[in-house]
Image 1 (spheres, rainbow, N blue to C red):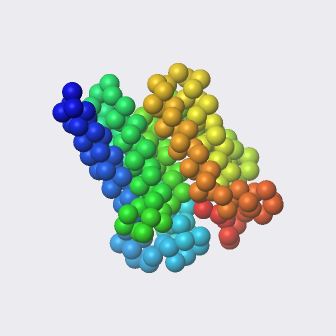
Image 2: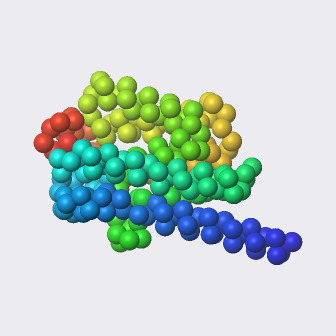
Length: 209
């Protein structure tokens, strides 16, 4: 029994560790440098996500960053589901990858706000919840044109959707934790929203999500 428990803990540790390291890859930094747009941390909000990459004026680099950040959330979930079906490991993998993006080892634990990676994890772990969150983002953005508010609305909607749709408890817990961390990472945006100072998309100082 002890050997089985030790093997299980080792497996969990390896899955979580590998997923965290993949999530830690700062694609926004790597892609902007490779594309000749400099260091994304030196412009705009200093965030490494796709919204700030867009401030370089390179839509292609922003799209690549968006896709790469989403992929590094989805791949660990899908890989863990393939290797360890019918276990909670895919949700552990998704959570670790998400935390890796927020607190990347390679950047001194100073990462992004997690929205693209959040969606990557959601669509891989529970695609109906991902669709609800995406629709919530699109609907709010169509009305307000505020990216950060749309991300917060989507994050708030995701746990409710996960519960109502009847996802397994491990999935619901994962979605709740990711949503909570998105709110924490958007604390500056929330402060500006309360003051009515959060710019709309297209403004010179629109806040990154």
